[in-house]
Each structure stands twice: as structure tokens, then as C-alpha cells.
Amino acid sequence: MTNTRHSQFTSMADCLTSSLIVKHMHKLPPAFYTRTDVVQIAKDLLGKFLVTNFDGQITAGKIVETEACHAPEDNACHA
Image 1 (spheres, rainbow, N blue to C red):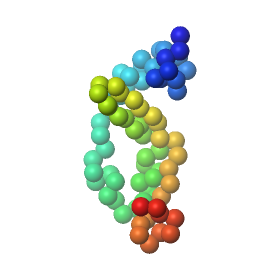
Image 2: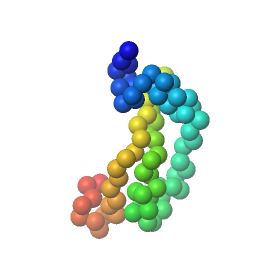
Image 3: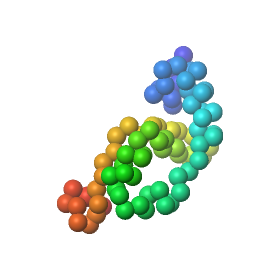
Image 4: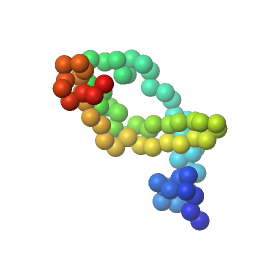
């Protein structure tokens, strides 16, 4: 059985396990993002989960790639 809302999981068991894990996650504090070492922030984000809850529909994805830019002096930054 394929559940399109959770197609990133390899099985229904993975989907259910991940849903339980999401319920036990905690938000990172604002201080996590306001540190001066943007490269360290990018490294620390690897493996974390980005979770949304829109109208009771929870979705989550694991961060597997990051990029560090230090605006405004970093020309690669598009902020």
C-alpha cells in the first residue's frame, strides 16, 4: 500500500515510526540560529528535521544538505 503523503518512507512501518518520533521533537531555540559562526550552524542543522503542521496535517523532512552564507558581505547570499 502506497501512502502518497509519506512517499519518502520505504514502508508503512517507517511512516508510523516517524510520526511517533515527530511528536517527541522539540523546536530549536532562536539562539541556535543567531550564532555568529554560520558554517557551524549549517553543520549543526544536518540531520535535523523540518516539521510543519498545517490544518492538523503534519509533514517532516530530514535536512541532508545545507549552505552557509553570511549576509550582507557574502556575495553568494540572496537574502
